[in-house]
Image 1 (cartoon, helix red, strand yellow):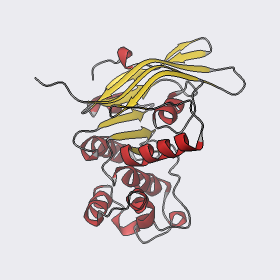
Image 2 (cartoon, helix red, strand yellow; image 1 turned 90 degrees about the vertical axis):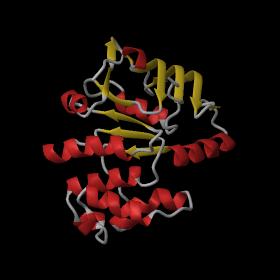
Image 3 (tube, rainbow, N blue to C red; image 1 turned 60 degrees about the vertical axis):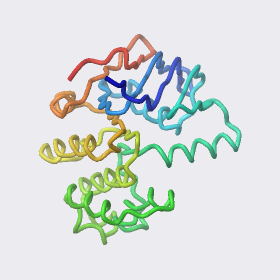
Image 4 (cartoon, rainbow, N blue to C red; image 1 turned 90 degrees about the horizontal axis):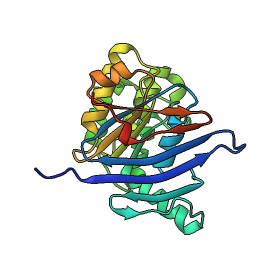
Length: 237
């Protein structure tokens, strides 16, 4: 049996809050094609920070190894060239669902969802429409974000994260603003609509929902002012 392809590998990554009062330590974190992970733990323990680091949006204080699709990335390099490289990798490989929908208020829902395609200079109108249908927001496509509900905005953000079929889908509390029935549908949708050879990593306060949807749980382990998060701590769904 062929081993699943490794998409992301991290070793000894550390992030520290500006005042030095909190540290997030990631001793080992490996993501392979087909993985469906759910990070669990109390509020403020660094789960969202982890997603920011893995998606190349935050700067760690140190990182021994960070490879994305087999390519080594220097996370602590702050040169203009490095920032450009990280932005290109983020656009190509990642889909991201923030805690708050973060839709651009001056664009229609359709154009918000289409943004990743525009950045990659590609088109996928049929996929955009299909995602809108599956998320029950097709009637909202011509509206502006201020004219739809919080839950509809969240589902639009989910469609935006999926429209370009990312290899790595990172979602921060994607179901928090949704009705329980919609939440279950979204957890399955995140899993099935990510690239066939991709992986999903969600942050959630509802481990039972994640377990029911077939996600493997990874608990954040608190040790004083330090949180440790590692795929070595995963528990089977």
